[in-house]
Image (cartoon, rainbow, N blue to C red; front, side, top):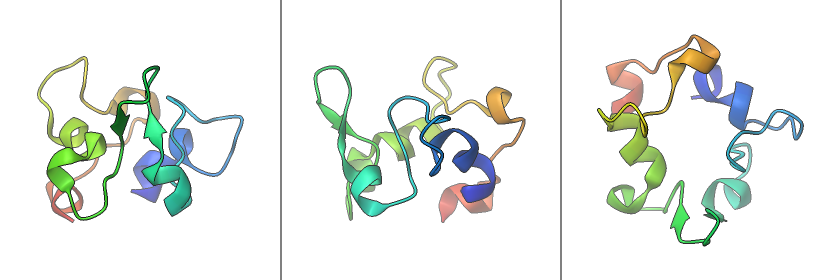
Length: 80
């Protein structure tokens, strides 16, 4: 994920998109959204993790966009 995701969700505070940084557990697990009603990652509950749902989504409005980074997760990376 660091190859594909850290450009927009890594430790660089000036590059963070969507208020989501994945460089620490605290940041990755925090509550997100205007209403603070979802989490990118819910430990041990992938079905409740927005990140997982967006990785697998077919909806162009929800899927994590490789257009920004020109990188895409492989099926093996998604499974992991």
